[in-house]
Image 1 (cartoon, rainbow, N blue to C red):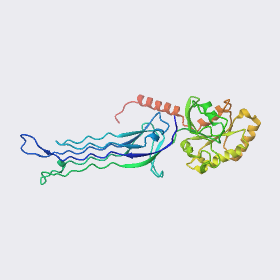
Image 2: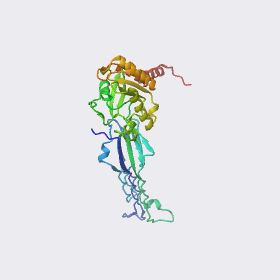
Image 3: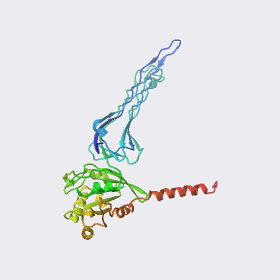
Image 4: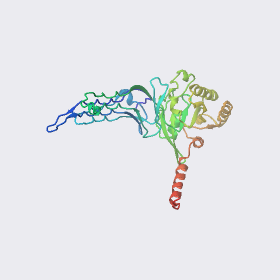
Length: 351
């Protein structure tokens, strides 16, 4: 499946149907009169966040969305039928932005979230509604109110608990394959990962979602390499894992380079808690790892782990550190069940 995280689309809600001009003409009816019905309402444009989607690729091939117009009114005071809503399904994590990308118009963070984005126009009045004691045979009617239209941008930000970042060839793909169900491409060259990857990690009977993004290099905020466009996918993470190649020239410099790009990007990424992991321990000895760890602590890292994504060494300790930043959903559910049990056993009282 191709990955696309931005798309520009055109939206137009349905216009209301026009009211009818009609007069009653029936045999054996002594008095006729106006009986034109009102027009029907136009269809709304509705966004719904659904499960099972993780890309906006469908919007590359379908970019115009127009809801149907309401039906016109008819004689015998019959109101025109309203048009159905046009429902647009988007992945969870999608944001709807204005055409200039300056304003967030809608943000979908939960499955099933539904937003009526553009309302359809109301139907016009038929001539029967204009009848008064002094205007017995009106011929005026209202056309339907036109629908709303606009161009918007869709931007996808993957929802993950933990974000994975580092320089190219830091071993991020190997790491996510080791700890999760992901099947990321692994290669002996830079920028093996071209699009974000998601994996579900299970550790000590707890699960969390891990997001891997393409590697960052110096100048990524200015467009160097793949740039920083994919950093938005880890903006909502609770904690970041910063992988550093222990066999690199200068791990402390690599640490500073990536953090400088986070600072340049903004979005609060530089302020997120960060677990630093010296990766590829299988290619170096423990003494070298301890020396680099001390350099990273001096460079500003809070805590440094030494791991091997290939062999799995040190990974359990790193995942233990990750769990400390995540909510314990199991204990929350247990507490909720205990509260329900207390409510069931409580004695009933009218007061």
